[in-house]
Image: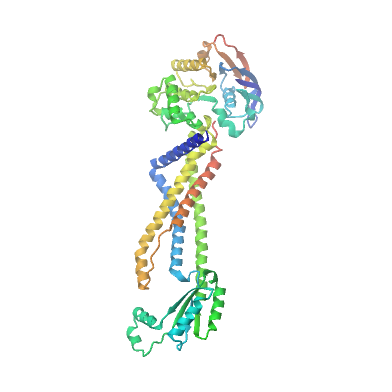
Amino acid sequence: MNRQHLNTWLLRHLQVALASLGRLCRAPLATLMTAAVIGIALALPTGMHVALSNVQQLAGGWDGTATLSLFLKQEVDEKQAMQLANRLRAHPQLATVQLIDPDLALEEFQRLSGFEGALQALKKNPLPTVLVIEPHPQQSTPEAAEALLAEFNQLTEVDFTQLDLQWVRRFHAITEIAQRGVMVIGLLLGLAVLLIIGNTIRLEIQNRRSEIEITKLIGGTDAFIRRPFLYNGFWYGLSGGILAWLLVTLSLWALNEPVERLAGLYHSEFDLSAIDGQTLGFLLLGSTLLGLFGSWIAVGRHLSSIEPS
Amino acid sequence: MIHFENVTKRYPGGHEGLSNTSFHITPGEMVFLTGHSGAGKSTLLRLIGLLERCTRGQVRVGGRNLAKIKRSQVPYHRREVGMIFQDHRLLNDRTVFDNVAMPLVVAGLRHQEISRRVHASLDKVGLLNRERVYPITLSGGEQQRVGIARAVVSKPPVVLADEPTGNLDPTLSQEIMDLFSQFNQVGVTLLIATHDLELISNMGKRILTLSHSRLMRDTAASRS
C-alpha cells in the first residue's frame, strides 16, 4: 500500500507542478517580467561574488600563503646556494623552496623589462641568488611567517629577507570587507526577492479567489489549495535563478575581451573564470528556496482569510 | 442522518440567523425547507456544510457531532455533503468536465476513475455531450445541472441545495426537481431550500417551514 500511496502522491505532485508551469507559460510576458526582476536582483550579488573570486584568483599565490624571498649574499656561489636550498627543503614548516639562479633571472628580466640594452652594458650580473619559499598553508598566518622570517635572517648565507606581509594583510582585509559587502547585498536582495514573490503570489491568490472558495466548498484541504501556489513560487524562483546565471554569464562574456587585453599588458595569463558549479548550485538552490519560502508566507497569510460564503 | 437539537446561530452584532431549532432527517429522506427570505434557510444549510458553526445546541450529520470536527477536518466533512447553490458557483475558466471533476480531483482519485464517474454524472443530468464546453456558454438551467452533477459526482450521502431553481422558469425548475427525486430514489438524503411553494406542494415530500429564524411547521410527507 505504501508504494502505491507514494506513487499516487508523486504523480499528483508532478501533475500540480506541470499544471502550475503550464499556467505560468500561458501568461509568458507577466511570468517573464517577474522572473526578470528576480533574476536581476539575484544577478547583482552573484556577479559581485564571481568578480571577487576572480580577484582572489588573480592574487593567486599571495592569497592565503605568504611567500618569503631570501636574497643571498653575492659571495655565495651556486653550490652553496644549492646546499642551503636542500637544507631548507628538509625544514618541517616549509612547503616549497625554489632556487632562482641569477643568470636565469637576468635573462628573464632582460626579456620582460625592455631594458635589454642597458642591462647588456653591465659588466657582471648584479642580481643575487634568490630562494623563494612558501610555508605550509597552516604556517601561513602573518605571525608564523614573521617567525620564519626572523629565523632565516640568522642564516649566514642570507643577505636580506623580504616578506610582502603588509600587502598580504591589506589584501586580506580588503577582500574580507568586499566579501562582507557582497553578503550584505545578497541578503538585502534575497529579502527583496522574497517580497517580490510574496506579492506576486498574493495577487495570484486574489485573482483566483473564487476558485479557492469553490475548492474549499467541495472539500479541498488547505494543503491541496496551497500546492499550486507553492509550485508557482518554486518556478518563479528557479526561472529567476536561471536568468541570473544567464545575466552573469553574459556580463562575464562581455568583460572577457577587455580583461584579457589588460592582462596581456601585464604579461599575465589571467583569464576571467565563469560561475563555478558550486556557485551555480547555490544560486539555483537559493533562488528556488526563496521562491518556495516567499509563496509559503503569502499563502499562509492570505489563504486562511478566504472562506466560502 | 441530520440532527438539529436546540440549535441557535447568533451572528456578531446579536442577530440570530437561527433560534432554538430542532428536527431530524432520516437517511434517504427528501426534505424541503421553505420560508420568507431571511427566515434562516441558508443559515441552516450553512451549518450542515460547516460553512458556519452554531452558537448553541448540537448539529449532527451521519452520527458525527459537527462541533467536534476540527478546522483541519472540515474538508473531509464537506466531501460527505454535496452542495448546490442558486448561483451555481462554477468556474468559468474550466470546461464542464473539469468543473464536475473537481470533487474527485480534490479527493485524489485516479484519472480513469475520475473520467468514468464524471461521465456517469454528466449522463445523469443529460449534459454528456457538453463536457468540452465552458459553463458560460450554457443556459441557466444547464449551468445548474452542471452544479448538480458536481455535487453528486463523488456520491455523497447528503446533498444540500440552496434555492436551486431560483433563477429558472417553471418547466426547468420541474426538471431539476425531477432530477433530485431520482437521486433520492437511489438513497441520497436531500435537503432543498426553496421559496417556490407551488413547485413543491404537489411533490408530496416533507416540508420544514422557517419563519423569523424559527422552525414554524414540520409538514410530514403525504406520499413517498
